[in-house]
Image (tube, rainbow, N blue to C red):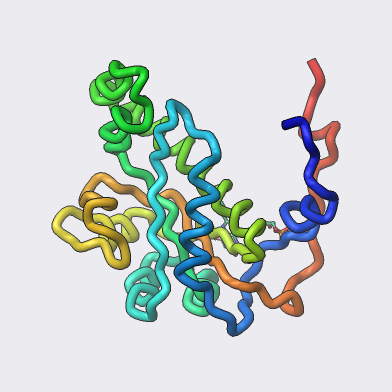
Length: 211
Ligand SMILES: Cc1cc2nc3c(=O)[nH]c(=O)nc-3n(C[C@H](O)[C@H](O)[C@H](O)COP(=O)(O)O)c2cc1C
């Protein structure tokens, strides 16, 4: 606690990490994806609810199912990436609270009676967990290409609609019909020769204030 990680690690996580759209011909192993989840799961969510669900699409068949939902400019990026993650959220996340937040037994009932709170909590925390996924991926030497240019209703219908099997995931883990897509994230080993120059960021004074 109180320790600062090495500067070279900060480069890997932040300063030199880029968003990638072209990929080297190198696969991502099952074990790497398991390691990725086993890291990101430790990062915080409200009431420890962990509402995000992650579908790792790797097969050509799974990618073809995703294709019709994508904005045209994102199709090639998705099809050529070794893995595309659907970062989703489970609107019934609160059913897991007796296990994940056992010291506060009233919490599940609070969510069960308030759909607005469920939606806000699921979106906020699955977005955070998607960001944790990006940082964990970078920590494991992977590159990311997040994408919001797609039609989430089409992805939900294709992958999470009631009565449809959830391709590539355990059925129990992805109960049907109440899982919704937040954003997509391509994963792999990026081709650095395809990167454009880095875009600027807001300086401290334009994005932050001391009060
Ligand atoms: C949530 C999110 C959605 C994004 N959506 C798209 C997208 O649909 N298509 C795309 O080409 N890039 C998309 N991007 C990539 C951003 O434009 C990129 O991360 C940003 O310009 C920073 O680039 P850099 O990491 O190389 O500095 C998205 C990024 C994020 C975090």
